[in-house]
Length: 114
Image (cartoon, rainbow, N blue to C red; front, top):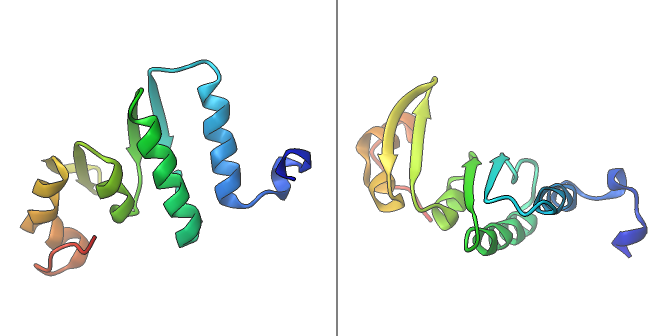
């Protein structure tokens, strides 16, 4: 099983889950996560989104992430930055509807597809 493997023998998604598990040992009230879905395939990403949804029920999560589908699935509030500058801040529906966000990230006025 996984419990007998060295951390470097685990997939990227498994390593991320181990890192989050380690951070939960001290029962923090806030988790700061920097791109926890980086390098994951769609199955691993979906599992991580499920983990994040469960974790947000008992603590605050500050999530830096580029996977917008995951962000929309997990976040209550989203802050969008472009080149270090605040572009928009609000609930997921506001961000999805924002023409400025769509233009900045899609280069056109298409809506996000979730």
